[in-house]
Amino acid sequence: MLSTGLPHGAVPKLERPGPLRDRVYEALLELITTRALQPGQHLVESELAGHLGVSRQPVREALQRLNTEGWVDLRPAQGAFVHEPTEEEADQLLTVRTLLEAEAARLAAAHAGSAGVAVLEELCAEGERAVAADDVDGAVALNARFHAKVMELAGNAVLAELAAQVDRRVRWYYTPVARQRGRQSWIEHRELIAAIIARDEQRATEIMRAHTEHTRRSYHARPRP
Image (cartoon, rainbow, N blue to C red):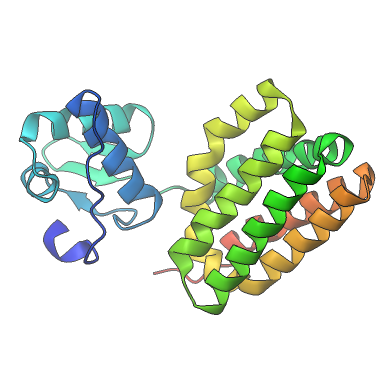
């Protein structure tokens, strides 16, 4: 049941302004992405409404939208369940992520200035501190911010738009392997920063490709519940 499946403090506050259905959608998507709501978990409208402090109608609308986008499965006579991604689904998305991120790293090495590099270094330091503190949620969020910054430094709006479409799912797949990847992930980030500073496009591409491939392999090798 949901009431026992959500960690204490996991329910996000509904941000204002904006239509209520959109805010409920964003809140539920965040709970799914961070795995506060686990793949396969039964989603009970009344319980979700109670946790979020809203009526059942915006929850129902949000679940229908999440179903359309592949985050939730609506089963006749059973209700709503968090989607359980297949290994093939994960592999396809993480493979596309590798292609996008490797090109972003190359472009970042070609175009990044000192201010952008400084932001990467600060995010890396924060990520290392999160790992040292065993703050998995913090490390996942900082990992996403680091990769988003590399994408920004690439300076290609189309590439950034494509990456944004897969970012939420990358976080979803990364969360269960974040502790396993741990410090090594941030060592690889440091190596990427060095390649960007050196303006070594080939090296940056190789590092990012290997980095994202490590995550893909870690996901497939993860312990199953």
